[in-house]
Image 1 (tube, rainbow, N blue to C red):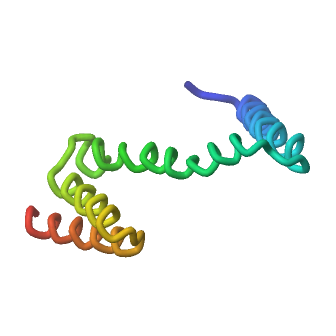
Image 2 (image 1 turned 135 degrees about the vertical axis):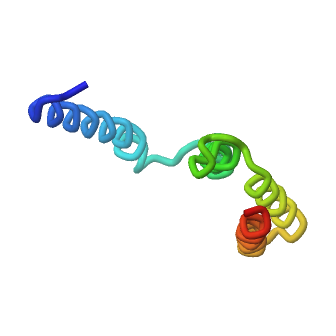
Image 3 (image 1 turned 45 degrees about the vertical axis):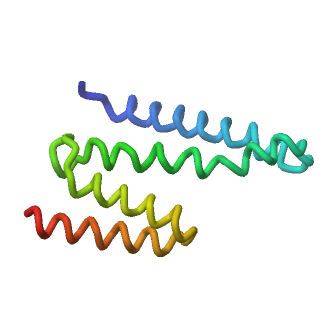
Length: 109
């Protein structure tokens, strides 16, 4: 579908206004007030909930492999999770997963 320059700018402006409205509704309206303890407790888990949603598609449907799961990425993910749980060290888990990924890609071709 081809869009004219005017349509593209309208789409950009509408999406920008929508993004601003979403962020302002939380930060602008509630930014100066104290949130209740239950809300603060729930917000603490936001990064933990978002990260798997960002990483899982890269592991299960990698673009580098035309969307098919492959042993190298699955093994690296398993090593990363195992190291993270065992050591409670994010950097060790990331480094171990990265080394595993590159080693598996090297050995499996």
